[in-house]
Image (tube, rainbow over all chains, first blue to last red):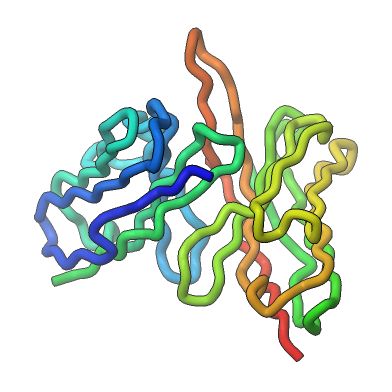
Amino acid sequence: DIQMTQSPSSLSASVGDRVTITCRASQSIGTYLNWYQQKPGKAPKLMIYAASSLQGGVPSRFSGSGSGTDFTLTISSLQPEDFATYYCQQAYSTMYTFGQGTKLEIK
Amino acid sequence: EVQLVESGGGLVQPGGSLRLSCAASGFTFSSHWMHWVRQAPGKGLVWVSCVNSDGSSTSYADSVKGRFTISRDNARNTLSLQMNSLRAEDTAVYYCARDPRYGAGYYYYYYMDVWGKGTTVTVSS
């Protein structure tokens, strides 16, 4: 199985900050990497697919980059509604796997 | 409106069985792969299983292989997950999710873009 490791596991930041979350795959996955946002009690929401493509309706302050084994999700200027948990997910293998999540909290 | 609605969750004893359903509406169900993803209380997302668009191919996480069976009925726009030999560690919210899985030029896009709200499964005596 392909293992996905996110860092950090949690992050405190302020409104307006620029934040970056990192995701590393245990083997090369090309750009088959997706990012999801999840708020408490809610279903996950697709934010970025294919490593860098913004899902429709997602604000442009979100961006993704990377290929191979190393990927990043960047939020350029945090808004109050961005505080949530973020998961990366590989789609290189039919057996999808998720990172452990990064909880983004208000400082 | 594109929608997925899960049902069938509940309380079951260890070793018991449960069948989850996911009703799809607002899109061409038969054109999409479908997945089940679960989330134990306070924990992260875990992929469980998927089925291709016509139901001829399935895949499972090692933790559920041999115990869970995914299936679909394209005539009824319904996805199912039959869960047998349930264990305490299967306790989770179970989500169904849509996977467009399409190609554009040389690249294929695989992701889960529509999710249901989830159904809760509790395995406890």
